[in-house]
Image (cartoon, rainbow, N blue to C red; front, side, top):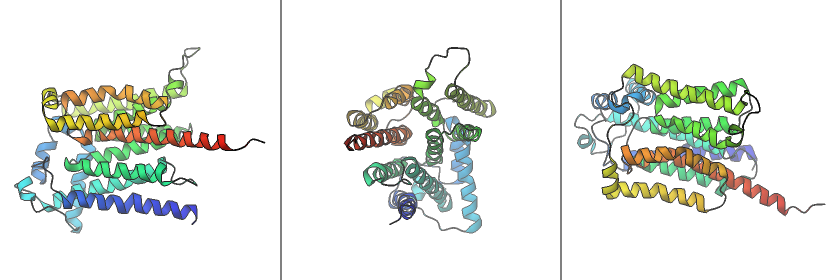
Length: 342
């Protein structure tokens, strides 16, 4: 079978069919025991126009636009039988908007992951490409027991940013694309900062190079520019929407220490991190990424419910990408070393 046909089938199966089935199982086969009172337009606006949620404008707006499309074109709706218990004003069309939107961006994220991990190249195998994408697809799916309108959208932007970073050709268009993605990702969720962390980890040797003159190198300049895009967008959102709960809702450290489910959430991330570090291959850039993102881990322990696996998912997504790329590089080196020299 030609390589183009194999790549197309991978995109179809792993980028469309399987993510749609996963989302269907999550949204129609199960009922959330966590998210309530946000499955009607009134309840949604009450929740997401206040607190830390009001700054995640792109996801919130996209969900409302999706809801409008469902009503305008009378699209099929999906809702659990317990919708009335989840929201006394529950609207099946509004619930379906979560399904349509999150499924759409889960599909796009899965497609991008296939490209990032090299599915379009010859001789890429199941273990190094398809299995990691399957893992992330199912992880994103099961983490949606906390139903929100911005998670899969944020993974989509993270994946685009990774693709631009690892395929950086040094052109102005690449830089403009990366800056645009950083701004859009920041309008979606604060985890856009991981784009800066990933860029730093991938290019840390060049970025940490001491200049012989006052002139900075290109990697340093790009990092400064995308950092500025993130910071100005982040501050701009708070200037427009106010500074009430600008960073977090409340201190919940005691809950994360006392509650069994929160402890299990922390153990989940620690377990994944340990698996990544104790198995081949671990390049230094993975360690660098973990170090620069460790403040986020502390932030979750202090201010967020660690039981929400979705909070760990963007970290795991980027760590998996780095791990697989390191493993692919190691396998290539081993293959080349086995070739007899003339």
